[in-house]
Length: 120
Image (cartoon, rainbow, N blue to C red):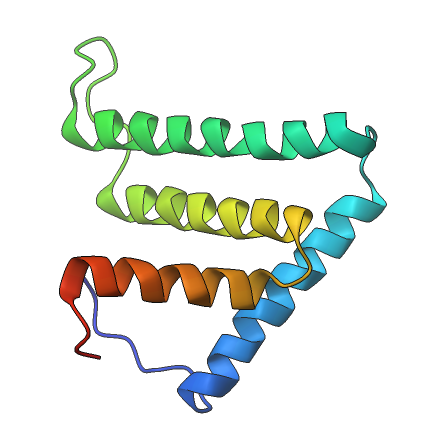
């Protein structure tokens, strides 16, 4: 990991920016979506599989596990691909509900409680 300065603003402001960006990405994708309706929604969900495959490709490339190709990626590439998975998942969630932030926050609280107990 690298030492990077925290982005300006409070944590709440940065979170608002995250959700505003997810909403803007969803709007942009939805506007230019060649296939709509249920089929378009399902294709948006399938995009997650593509992104996860890119994580796998980057890990294989970072570790040189393909002897024909050798080392083709860095761990920074893996980080970027993982970020793409998170972004794609949040946009997919936004496709299902305009209450993306609330749905995610409630679910994260349930996972935290189940995994870590009630301590904040």
